[in-house]
Length: 185
Length: 185
DNA sequence: ACCTGAACACCGTTCAAGT
DNA sequence: ACCTGAACACCGTTCAAGT
Image (cartoon, rainbow over all chains, first blue to last red; front, side, top):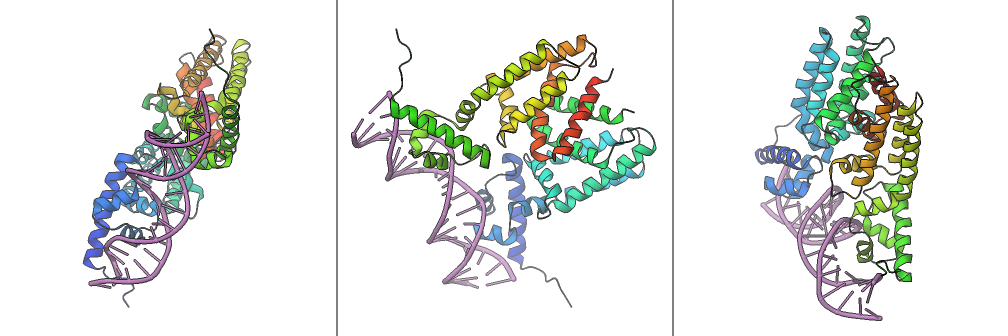
């Protein structure tokens, strides 16, 4: 029994074009870029966009799929063999990921609690990696004993947001301060 | 020579009504609330709103005027006779101020660098108070010697943003971590 | 099975015409 | 001096009709 049918050729082409144009638009104008503009650029009617992607977040989620996998692998590797800078490295990695599109950090922060968000499951994986990193760091004593996974998750989400609103220097400095607070015995 | 004339009675009334309705709308829907809705609620045409307030930020700025004065006085007092928790108190005060309208934190962060923003001068005062607080704290040794005013300003703006995207517990905890990092010798 | 595009309900902003 | 509201240029979202 074939539960998945291969899509019609034009449908597949429209899907790909929409993804490509959405990526370009989100990079230029952030995640709030006009959906009508994306459909126009892809050469399809607006209804076609909605047929493939029922919401803006679904579109963002589809675009992030591969990028997410790379990030998760990086996190798994860090958690498996943590060095002294594992936490800092992880926070930087998530920050760079969020910098893909402006406005993405806010979407991730919301997706953490909102089960209806298409980004929710990937946010949970980010949180889970944070949990494991902090547990390891606690064992090896590089982090204060009362540090929690929530601390790390909050810090990564915060770091991503900060890079949108503060200068890179200010944001980086602030994150270092928080990391040092976390390191304190 | 009278450089300022007293405004027409209806103009003054419209001005007040617009302010009142804008405050209500911003509290309910955040700083991105519909300007047309505000004009409608105030019982004036949309052109009247633009006549009094050329931009959304001008409207926000006008609403914040008094509130700002109270905040600045608080900051001046803290800088004049700083206690051990002066920094933490100040960060909390700015955070609560930014919580007046959702989206205000982002507006403040942008206003810090954007000279064209109607919020720019008040942002500069916030930064200046941060400078003085950190200078005092450095003298009394409650803060690491390389701490700067930029650290404190970044922290306050960040704290305000965090409260919009993170739970109060996570945000508070993160700010405490950064403050502890700042306190370290 | 998929696509189209008109239809609906909203916006922000400007500016000629009124009082 | 101030106000009005039509005009313009945009949105997001749905859905009947087509192929």
